[in-house]
Image 1 (spheres, rainbow, N blue to C red):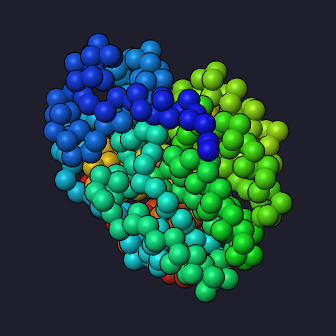
Image 2 (cartoon, rainbow, N blue to C red):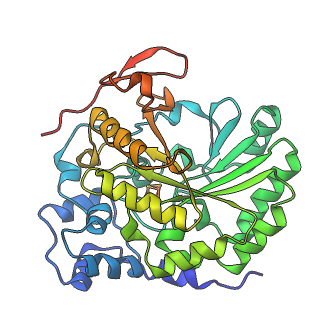
Length: 355
Ligand code: SF4
């Protein structure tokens, strides 16, 4: 039986109510925050709350993780901005691209990011998370063309190491999956989660898949305090490819300096900058949105400043389930609001009007 790890204690002690959190911060909640927290629940671990407090009420951490009246004030936006629902092929399994599928074994995260593209699904008891693992496995067995499985959620590292092992073992036994990737925010939010048991799991399964990857979700260099840096450095000795994924967010990292500082730090930690996501047009998160044209200008400037190998791919999920495509390439730089879809069609991106 697995010993109770310390991160679960940290998890249990997280702030879940507005009065508790703001009493700790010693700040007044912003106007409308109470109503917001009733619609989109609050979840902030204590360690992060201390960082938010140290940075102050106007800081990027407060913007990323504290409720904002704008979440309800801007009524536009999509509940399922990337159209996962249409590609839900088996319980907890989204199969949209030929060779890879998403596995969503939990709806629980170590924090509630206010910009989250799944914030409406996570707030409801959504179909995406209904479990029937036999059916999930049966689907993968019928679809050997799926060679990469991406554990996402919620955050898959919310599961215990025993539970992860159960899944990894069953997936390895299929014999068709070569690559396994975990998308997670734990290394930054609750770094204790990267415990010895998880390291053992990676070592144990290294030989059963071609690659194991950990894509760390991080948006700003201020998320990376000394503890996080130490923990990420400690992962370098493990048989896991370290990648990053970042969401471009208005008021958080929408400047060349912020992105450059983050990427520089990731490279120093030997994390390969992998994805820079254009923000999704999610209902309740539109105050983080910035126009594609603006994102392209930022990315072009980044291209001038970084070596090619340090440049994350700038991608966008075209609303309506059209899938993830390049948000930038030199040929379409002057393409204004248009994108080239996965089928080669030119798609006019419909963007919200922001005031
Ligand atoms: S960790 Fe990811 S899925 Fe969870 S709230 Fe944040 S953005 Fe959403």
